[in-house]
Length: 422
Length: 152
Image 1 (cartoon, chains in turn cyan, purple):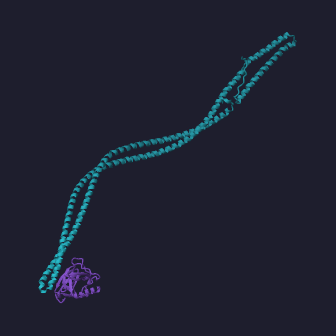
Image 2 (cartoon, rainbow over the protein chains, first blue to last red; image 1 turned 180 degrees about the vertical axis):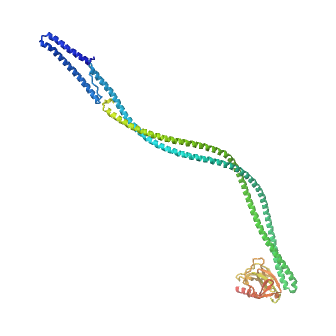
Image 3 (cartoon, chains in turn cyan, blue; image 1 turned 60 degrees about the horizontal axis):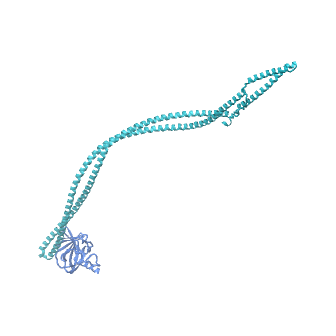
């Protein structure tokens, strides 16, 4: 049952009044002196009043002390102990206050526990944040460095692209020159083919002429051989005549000797013998001259024959070479024909190469533009990374501050004793 | 000119080493083409060997070598002149025969002999454009006999 403090005071007052009234009745019933009749009710009222006062004040004092102890403990941060509230049949405001303080402690315990947990989590998070921002700072520096490298690389790439564009432009110009040269070469190749065919025909005609020449020269060689044999035959006859002349000479000489030895009778014969000897001499000289002439003729014949044979050999060799040359001309003709065919196809190929080189040049120019844009983007990224790095610095500073706050909070919260629940 | 007791006043002309030599026709038996004589060992280099002439063995000598010259036998004009002196036949090898010269006594004598000098040449005469060294056939026979004697 709930009885409030005010009711308790009212009840005490009623008790005092009742004590006064009861005492007055008792006094009236009992024969007391007159002076006592006025003092006894007062004493009864005082005693009841003091007893009730003592009882109430003691009770209030104990309850207040109990609550004060609990609140002081809480004020000191000890949230582990609840206020012990005895189960009584009659409750008052102190019980309500104890329950309220207990509820407050519970709430405060929960809040402090949450703050503690949150502070711990915040400390961990701020440490993580600090580490992350540090890493991000480092990463940002690396990204900035990399982006600067990228910017430099893109700058080089742009220069290279420009050089490639110039080279490809030169290549296109070179290809156009090659195209013109190929067209001219194709014309010349056709001309060469025509001249090669003419050369082949001339070589064939020359070959036929050489065939005739070789046949005639071979006939000449045979004639020279026959002539040489005839000269040899004549030479043999001349030798025979010369031999006969020598013998006749000696015979005439011996006849002249004998005629001379015969004296006057032999004079006529001696003259004849001398004439015969002279004739023999002449014959021998003539035979010798003939032999000498035949020798010269034979030598000349051998020389001419040798020349003709050399000519035949050379003409035969020339004929063979001409045959080779004709064959070579035929092969050259085929090659020139093939080359001319290939040359005629080259201009279209070169034209397509020129077109391709122009496309490549355009693409390279576009690559150059992209490289330029990339360079600008790289610079922007670098600037952004620098901004991010600065922001990271600020975040790191903030994280440090939060960490300090978390530590302070933790320091403040940790003085609360929360028991095993935290 | 005298030779073997018969005066023919004629000479046989033989050419040796570019010189012309005259042999008294009285001593000349015949002129024949050169034939390789049969060699005779251990003789002077002037002696070529021996040959049969009409059944008679005769010695053959190179006339050029006898007068201190060389003689060629490798031509078809080379001849052997058969000389008879002192009853002996002697074959003289010469490069060629030039013929017979008559009326030798009418020829002009050359006072200064050419390069050919020696005991075998007794005089030199001018026959046309040719200088003929007239050979002393007796001295020739003696010289040949001396050569044969020295080889014996």
